[in-house]
Image 1 (cartoon, rainbow, N blue to C red):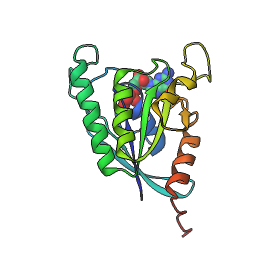
Image 2: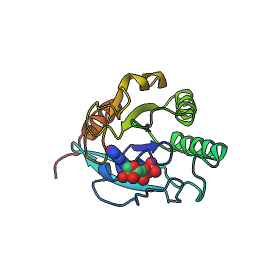
Image 3: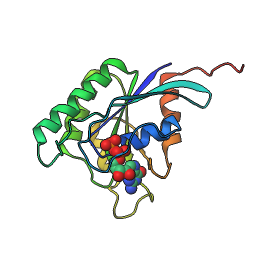
Length: 177
Ligand code: GDP
């Protein structure tokens, strides 16, 4: 089963999306950015196709973005590199309310150069285009092709993202028992 890695800055909603994909509440969702977490793996099925997902959380404690931007940049890049090394596809999760940041752009560059299958999930798009949300076109500069608006919290757009991933990876259907 192919492994799909969720990569992104703290607080963009990776563990919420992980829980949504895994279909159960395994990862711990924290309001505080920079909380240490273990990397969580889950085996799951989508459309009768077996996949695994990893949430590449696990940031050092006490390193919120505003206090240690260099450290944050280094950590997110390290996690992106690990994801590239182990996963068949990488989903860069960004925050549709905060818009793109320097860390997002830097990690996107690393991922593009790695030559892996890439998807960008624009999270926190809860209401489909209100003023609080950045226009989707803002995210095309990341150079990932299609951009998927999702709301991990409200379970919007996650199915479309998974459809695209299993299609791109050509994950076979699990035979019926
Ligand atoms: P992570 O650090 O990237 O794993 O982010 P978390 O999953 O811990 O989420 C960070 C914060 O964003 C939490 O307060 C979540 O409740 C919130 N969040 C996650 N997904 C959504 C979403 O789809 N919409 C909104 N409005 N908030 C979200």
